[in-house]
Length: 435
Image 1 (cartoon, rainbow, N blue to C red):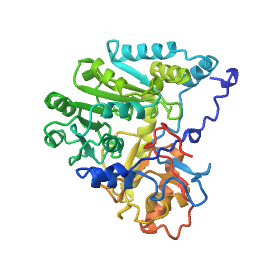
Image 2 (cartoon, rainbow, N blue to C red):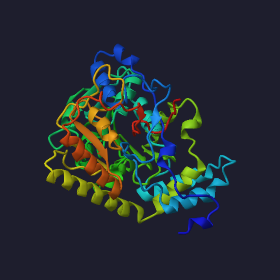
Image 3 (cartoon, one colour):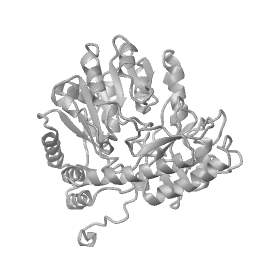
């Protein structure tokens, strides 16, 4: 397609122009003895720096244009050509709310997944509806059970709602241990499963999730975050929603569809859970997706070649990199079906108390080589998470990784003299910009 013929410039769409930061409060943890130590550990691993969001100069320095950013599970391909075309075609309608675009997109979603009306809602991103799904079903007397390690938004929602938190270790295959999750508490408000899991990239079999849905206590709900599911050939749980089960499923357009900065996500649930989520919104703004994002999302859904092509590109780059690491003798978490993986540095990478710089020591060493990688999870402290980028980006990662490992996995950043950089992370899903 010749984009010069369009009435807007769709060349050079920059993922960095969409970066967002989100402050995470920790004061609530002190009032929750049952979960405070775990929550504090999760925040230590998930936040970038013990000194807040500002450096000594008053702001955090953005990464330079020559830095390979493979830290936030973004798709380096960006939006598909079909989505870009619709962005341009609908931009001129931006003077009106034009809810018809959202309605058209929801109709396509219902058709594709065999859903009755009222079982899918479109949002500006998946972070907001995930919060609504969690926070409308947990509270002081309704605990949250989740995997460990897993995506920290569950932890933060539990802190916000003063809900007791019960983290359950992944099993030997790095899958969610659904039987252990069921045994963790007799009457939780929700079970939170990320599938593929973030940060391990591993899949929990659908039959295990279906078992948990069928055996969960009355009044509980299983919340399945399928943000990365498009990268996997395994079955989705959306058909369990269509069957009216006690399950909520989240999808995003940020990952395989390459729309992280455009903000589009879907909440799949029966009308009862949809209503509970809607009642948790103070104003209607959270549900007001832009008409351009709605149109781009619809075009992406209708683009039949997009998922298989991008799944293959991601899998090829991921497997080539994993083969390289294995040949060099490095240890990785096996079985990733996502656009990221975890690799062992051999040294505890948690930030040390009083460290003025954000990020893990190894991450800082990599950044000195102009490669920005992901964060560390407290329950796997020697591992770092790496996003799968382009073939060229992964080649640069491989060179930098070997160089840093050959130096001895860095245990101190004092000699690097790096500024307090802003390291992009999917932990901040675009809901708020600070600064």
